[in-house]
Image 1 (cartoon, rainbow, N blue to C red):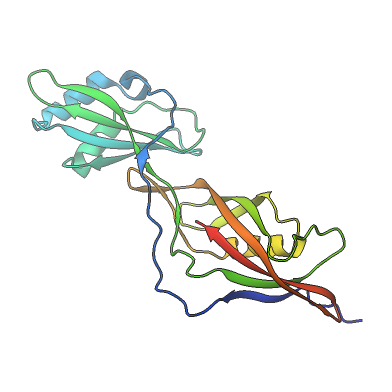
Image 2: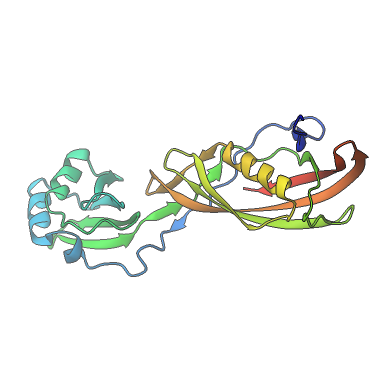
Length: 240
């Protein structure tokens, strides 16, 4: 006996495809860590000040980004603004190790002048975004299965999914927090998210992994009886 197909139509655009647009990033100060650590907890501040001032800190100061991850005890030190790579390497010699935990970051600013000092500031976090916006709603046709809770014709059902986006922009670990309750439709939504291209989250310009929430609507637009059972067609739109 030949197994019947379940998903009969996949990812069809309605009408002509519009020009691809990249969603806008909404960058803001990072919320991690919840409380900024003291500069002395991150590095040997006396040594760092001495080493940096030996290389002449400009009056405008120098800024550095420290990115911590879940594998290394020492952060990645990167220069910001007018700071040089060599200055970041000098700063790195004063860093204190921390137990690997998760991705987080801070900025360290070296202030020049008569009394050189170091201060800690929050990093800037830019969330992951899809590489391109969905041009049109997609139509997906599935055969309803026993136990599916399909909406009435014309009704819209809101769904929510969470997805991990790696530092290379790959989607994984997709979870339907609020499913459509049509199993094959939920499976197809997960598949569409998995094959989507993403721009990874940025922490002070450094790509980092992150968790992304996706909202979408499914609307049952038609149905018909076939040899396989009730075939329902849905219009799907997602906000990336």
